[in-house]
Image (cartoon, rainbow, N blue to C red):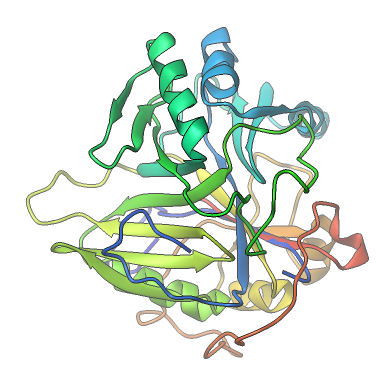
Length: 354
């Protein structure tokens, strides 16, 4: 949670940080754009939203037939591992879009539904965006066409998605400028119709944007800056190429931001060990009880699992600073994203939950 800006006991963002040794555009042109060549945060990898008590045909049709995601078979394997460890998960589907995913667990706890406080931006080619609009109309799915041609869509459990046209060179999003889908191997489950998750935008309380930027700079060495959309301050954190996290403040007179319900995002970092140590020193490393078999009490534990988790955001201006705070990221550094376990020291990752 943001000290001072956030109410005590209301965590604002949950992270899962993973390891990726080796390694943006925003939803609006009024937000500043920085042409960074290297970022310590190299990819936004997934968004996790609980989808209710049971998996339904409506959910399957929406995510795979209408939105064009690919059904990744690894979700069922992970679910079995969690159940074997005594976790409450009753089912898990992964909907792939390019190199990103929506993780859609069911039954933990029973009938739990999570809704991102904001929206998730998905990119499609011009042809695929037009095809998506036809599928939405045929399925009578809740959607509207924006003045800019984007599609504003509501999923069956209430999450807001924004499908936008990607007019540049066809690419998946991640640690490299170009990841041509015609040349790269897709994730298990086959190719998707979307290019990937371009951004996640979170609604945050008035006065929170600057502290969030300080958090990402201090903990990750990330490129983060507060811009404005009219009178609205927005913190933008850039990740790798073509991706961002956006934190848009509520304005005076607007409804208060909804209480956080446990949804989360996963990020990959190039600087896994240092980020872990700064997080541990700040008291932010968190063991999620959903996964009894995963603990991150030491760097050795985190490296064994190729990940660790954070639950709370704190404003470094209001809390003691961890030692070895990065002052600025290096301008260049090569990195390759691997999707295997990090036992070979080739992958590290961080996951965040807003």
